[in-house]
Length: 479
Length: 137
Image 1 (cartoon, chains in turn yellow, blue):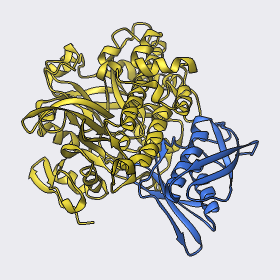
Image 2 (image 1 turned 180 degrees about the vertical axis):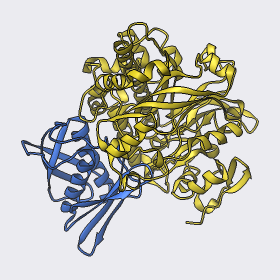
Image 3 (image 1 turned 90 degrees about the vertical axis):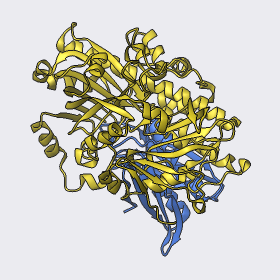
Image 4 (image 1 turned 90 degrees about the horizontal axis):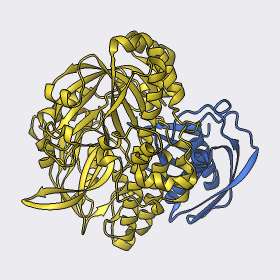
């Protein structure tokens, strides 16, 4: 394959021009600083962004966020919009963990009050929110109820005693996509996922107790009701085995049917079908159902977390949902493209929706500041609260990054390291970590990730989202 | 050693070998289980038939391993022995032996979400067959 040479557009943008010899139908645009671009070029993520540019019916450029790293088929940190009439939908463009996402919860407690009892809180939460690696969740949904969960998402949890009335309102899409088709989710996907409802998962999933270290935008922080020193909790999880199986099922199906639609692609993991085809519509219905399962899952986790807080700090300790965003999804959205208004299918693979102030999709209390966006860094550094800005809607199909982006492989980061020793070092920095396995700690050490502050500088300065607050971790639960 | 781990920026891969394709598929299945949990203490208390179809050896291997993953992650069975019957590019059938997962006996390592086509390789080498497979974790 020809060497890929990104051309710098400005301090935060690069372009890989369309190369027909590679089958590209459009350009690739990468959001990165010079330093991040150097790191990005060390793996195959740009080749994958070029492969995405070959998808039939792609609209606008294939986009790469500053946290981009090598994934499967699509790069992680990739965004691609496709035409609804002659474009395709690719399950790989959403990923195996459908609606993997984060929700940020604010407490009524300051850091000074939580830190003396942090160990008790982490231990209690570790008991109440299982990671699910070999254990079942505590929701206890029956097989006969699972289709209702898949239709109603977070709302099902609230109506069945796992949450407060206002919770569902403060999630992207209200915590449920109406387009869900539970009958397009296989029996084995339901069987695999049902016992895992209310569990975190492993890998990069976590529950983190944090405090607001610094407010960067006062009106934004005021709208989200957070202030410096306040304890917040970030929950990162997805659709567990149900979503994984939905993606597996449909990648297999689409690999079978691509010849029927005369689609050939440089990577089988990009397997796709026309949006309008039976297979495309079935996948989108199943994907929406899996997305709803993920919202229900994060809602259940927050409910159990509330119980843990009450147990440690008493009945007056309240937790309120700030917002919940997904970062693995495909959604129908409307944009101005080349001077005309078009409805497209936006694939976000490791990218977060970031709608600007005034957008009707945003809850009324945030409409003046832009959609809340949460960017986890690593368990030893920081996470960020951002608010979506106008340029995201104009340039990136309303999207920004989703994390710091992985730098080192799992095997590379753990070389020569001892889990207990690393745990002790984190503790010296005021960060208490509990994990179901020592691999969970070693493979997610801070040095495995890019500098989250550098990633945030790019999206802030490019005008995609603005900084609202920086969060520091205190206690971490890993799978 | 039945397999070796391969690096991936975000996830995990493995390279496995076999004198025959059947042996290769069995070793790949064992490698997959070893990423999910510690397989040292798995007892064969029950046997199940694991079947998959494909259009070539690559898709057959991905579909077969995703089937194994379904039993381990979805059915909660720790599989430790794989007897793969004669296979062709369209079909594989394997009798897999194991027991219900128990975190005490089979300490969990990481949740594998799926087996992927990313940089997938199934090829002949000087000793028989080799495969490289990457999984999403």
